[in-house]
Amino acid sequence: MRNTYDLDSLPHPGASSAKDVAYSRYMELARSVEPPSEHVAARSIKTLLIEPNALLREGLRRILAETAYSPSAAAASLEEIGSVAGFDNCAVVLIIDASRDHDETCRQARMLKESVPSAKVVMLIEEYDLKQVVAAFQAGADAYLKKSISHEVLVKSLDLVMLGEAIFPGAILDLLREREAHADHANVAPVAEEAHEMSVPAKGLSVRETVILRCLMDGDSNKIIARKFDITEATVKVHVKAILRKIQAKNRTQAAIWAASHLPSGRSTPSS
Image (cartoon, rainbow, N blue to C red):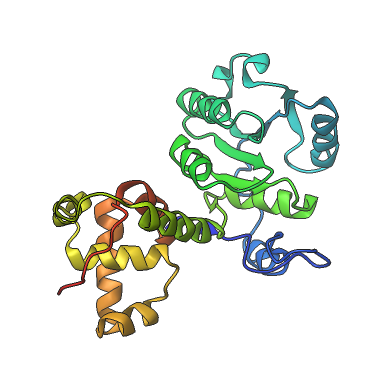
């Protein structure tokens, strides 16, 4: 199963904020897997670097020059690189700035994925925004990284992406909770309408599965969920597995992202 790595649970050594990159834990995870050199030995890695700022583009090019991800092409936009049709037999990774025009970045990511379905897309941003994270996820991004990460974290992230892993911010759970809190506060829909909305489970989810999915949005562990509803952890695991299958999510983080876009903002009383 494809994993989703979290870069935000611990601070970077010497960082000024707890929201900085989770360097220690992340590097431990990154080092636990083999680099992709043997995995893609039969194919060369074609790295496409898209950064509108010429100075930053040159800096990234130099950082990656001594790695397996030395840019094959670097430009201000994907269109400047031209056709990527000839990359079918290569391992392609796109490193693209998403902080200036996020919608355009997502469009370019989709365009590359359509041309080369096996291509990997790594987006670089300044700050996390829930709507943009969801948009990047839906556009097919394989990693969503802050520009404040170190060069070592960037290279290890690329290693993980080339091995088929996904790297999205754990901070997404905090953003999901904040969004739901705002939605609950601003909810002025009639009670009858809200009750009707909650009476129709999304994606065939039962009421119990729906409230457990909301717990996943809150970042609750199986143990906490079991205590909330007075059920066993084994039962929680069965429900979570059913939820992931029904919404076609690969892990709890993907399920939380899906729920942010598909579940109504109101809460429902759980039932068995």
